Image (cartoon, rainbow, N blue to C red; front, side, top):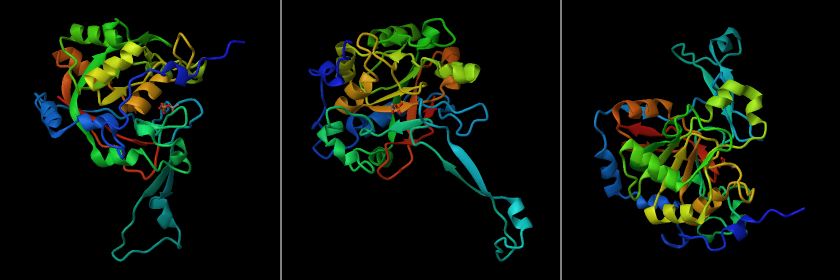
Length: 317
Ligand code: UVW
């Protein structure tokens, strides 16, 4: 049986941004999003229309998650029935209230990945030892990203519409040249420091197919090539945002390696990954008015030592 090549072999000569923002850096390519980039993003607001890109947590139609993770469960702890009991708390003035909690994978909904979320060869982003992840991320957790916030010019790349489809198919791939052609067809140019927001509408199949969706699980998405990684490095892309569960095609078709772009982009270049967005309303609006650029704003939750955290990104046109 032939052994799968290792991701370390695949990326042996791949570009790296380790050390570029200092030996203590934990936010990587988000450093490209300077105040000038915030203002560049603001200059793309035309009508003030706001789109929220988070999927509903606890959606009655189901919450799509990476295989092995479970959707969030919300438990009601206090409601009006609580006060049916003689033991109910009593507050001066007669106040009643409702309370609930969720148990959730921090990677199980629309989320920002921490830069220390994925690694190979015993090193995470910026060369930190992977053992700093034990019991919680001491380095490159999501907290520094949350502390900073993410604001810049966003560009929607509607790959499904570009390919004339409702949604991309299982395992369908594309690369940076396709992104550029898609941009050209939309009448927009991908500029340095743009937040790339990619639409596949693949999760339409999750809502249509139920459990069958997970058979031979293989998402569509970007696929690895040295040229693609160099393209991200040269354009200094800070943040890749998609409407899929894991931001790239699940297995690199040539080698079968799982999620090599998590390694090449996140671990090596410090590109932040944002997953599981719902860009349907935004995409419909862009198709209608031809404006594919906007102010992108995201503030993931500040969770100590976490591998990722939920977020409700905004696109403001
Ligand atoms: C994995 O953790 C495998 O993927 P994601 O980045 O989608 O959470």
